[in-house]
Length: 132
Length: 100
Image (cartoon, rainbow over the protein chains, first blue to last red):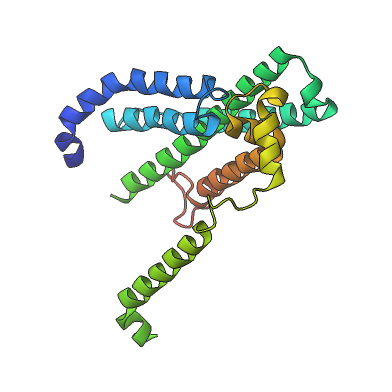
């Protein structure tokens, strides 16, 4: 495609950037309880990886079913964990359980946001291609 | 309607100015020693002790207001489902109206 040829030098750079985007996303999600950031922001940054993969190689086949599965699984687990903690008084729980709870929910939210935004991006990109 | 289309940019400009003025009006109270909501004070004082999260934003969205987070996640799920539903992938043999 014409657009891709213009972007070729940029695309080569993007391949090197992907690991850094990944590290940044993981850092935001894991440190969500200590520093600014968290599941939503980390998930949105993780979407950047899939957008970069699309920009690098447009013809690469991505299975949207996996994204759908991840999104549903993350949402159901998130709901189960949140509702499960309703049975306890949260402030009385031990320290490490609270830490694990924060990390797990942040990770699930991150996975969910990443899967959802990637689905939207890939679907719209596919529509664009079909219309050409 | 024609007049509206003719002065469309003017209307958009006036509307933008009104909205900016309204926002500034709302913001003018912030930071003037206005009595802060007692809930906000409670969060700032007790968030770290109760939830172990030093980031108060995380403490709020994963503990005090966790149902908001849950429904926000549900909202995203519904939005994605709607997009997938409205734009199904066309396969060979599909009718133009999208049905199989």
